[in-house]
Image (tube, rainbow, N blue to C red):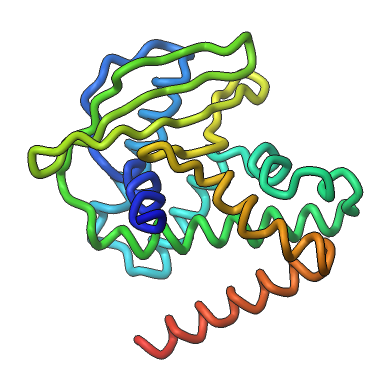
Length: 202
């Protein structure tokens, strides 16, 4: 159920949106991200390799991986070196991109409705949405942070299940036993396994 719900959160960024966007608002920022990802999903003129490159570009631009990483790793993040932080953000970005990429083929014209936008001070916001599919309404919350003049995503919460909290829980024991280097090794190992499985399917 958790994997299914997190999948919903990720695929929501590939869905067409029915909403009223406000200039310079978190809602508008989210809609712009959606539009870019929809364009990639619908572009049949590019191959899968180029599609993945464009997907990576959008995700790296519109998701704040610094904010995500600090919340996933928590205390060890402060003690990590600059190289460790850079490597973690790159590996975690790849996890998100690979998840999106595997969901691209499942894209269809489901509708997403923006229910409510809540500003939390000047820097944070919550955007509540619903995905309308097969006569069902699936609630998904997006947590956003303002980086300069731009609103970026730092968490997806489908049906009450936080992407950040899930990875935080999964990584906690590894960080406790093996530290940051141990976690990075595990992440690299899993990425290599994913690559191997992908090549085997080609």
